Length: 482
Image: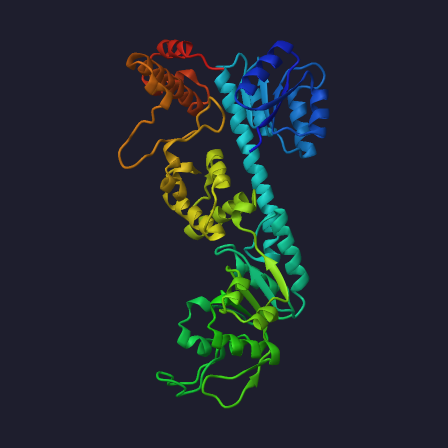
């Protein structure tokens, strides 16, 4: 995930450079300019995620920069700074669309870094929402089949190309990649869209009932056949049928399926006469059918009948940022179904989603998001709320999204009882030294988190810590932060 790009705008060179050092120490990418004119030129060329702008500058001031940024619709959050703090200025800035308002002198460097980090996160979430909205517009064309990775764009191109034809299609992909969604999209893009779409999982049918399920049976055809019954090919007459996991069909059923594809005729089990059906077949498989052919488990002639046009669905691990597009879609979907407010993904949770291998593909992602929506206690989903993180133990050590700034709400979970992760290098030190370093680490993390949660308000942080403000300040001085 790329670093937050910040533009610092101030006519005081010393303050510009100081702010740049503070923000760069938090892993951000920083550019500086000295007046409003340069700021607007820069934002037009290369919009930053966040612009930190002084209110009072010669020429174009901060409020004018803010107004112009909003007028041009630049994807940039604006934080205004001023040494002349008053309620009217703050109200004017927020009404004009500023993300935040900082007064000089700043409470602390942490307060500035925190405000910029939150603005950057807000910008990133807004960008994700806009990207998701753009992708969701494709939902009208491809149902729940979402994504904008190159491999998925190729899948969409093939669907649009093959949809209006009558060609048989083979969809290949791992379990959980969305093969049925592809079949439905093909049907929706065809001239048969107003007719039936019928899906059947060939691997889930008992072998003795396969022919009856596919082609139907007459009364008395076998024990238990007390009434005539249509098969799925008759149900799909005029429309489309998906034969999912077609590689699991018994050889006897493969022979009859081949006849349907060649002649367009089916015969119910126990019937004397065949009758014509007009069905488009989409087959799907998660196995290598050529290997099954070589093993004598699948007919070669049937393979070539089904494999007229092939669409290969990529596994989720190869789809890059599609993971986040799908995750946000599922968050909205479950929020609606559960009648809850949609939760947001923390930066660390997004990183965990991107780094996970997803053996169960999109189906596993959907279940993971549902799990997090149900069990997450906050409005922001953390790494520990994701089921694969709990199972793998990665939730036991949550890294900050920005160096030196712990993630809000981060927790350490290793089981039902609380525990402490001790850095391995401390075990090589004498007890007293190891304890001193660990206490120092605690002090830095604890005070930093308090300042984050209070927006840099030292008085409020001291109150929460149940310390005098002077004692809290001395604690900060003992462990200076960037």
